Length: 126
Image (cartoon, rainbow, N blue to C red; front, side, top):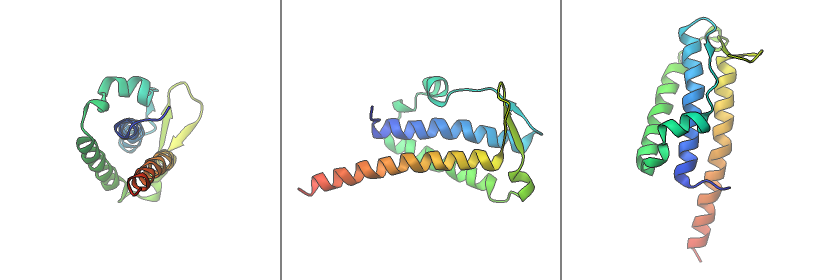
C-alpha cells in the first residue's frame, strides 16, 4: 500500500535512526556488535513518528541529517572502513557501506515523494 506523506517521512526517520546508530557505534568502538532491530516493526512502533506534524518531522529529519553530515564530513579513509557487525549475521559492514545503504534507500523514497508531489501539482493545474 501507499504511505501517506507523514508515514513516508516517519519511515525515513526510522531507517535513518537504525543506520546512523550503527555508524556512530562503529566510530566509537572497535568492531561493535549491534542487535537487529527492525526500523518499522520494532523501532517505529515504539517511537510513533506518525503522531507528529509534518513540519516537526521535516525539521527533525533536517536536524538529524545535519548531525550525521557533521560526523561524517571529517572522517578519514580509515574511519570509513571501520567495521560494525550485526549479531546473528556472518558478514561485517563498514561505515561506508552503512551510509551508502542509507542514502540509496532514502533516494528511492524521495523519488516516490517527488513523484507524488508532481502528480498533485499537475492535478491542481486542471
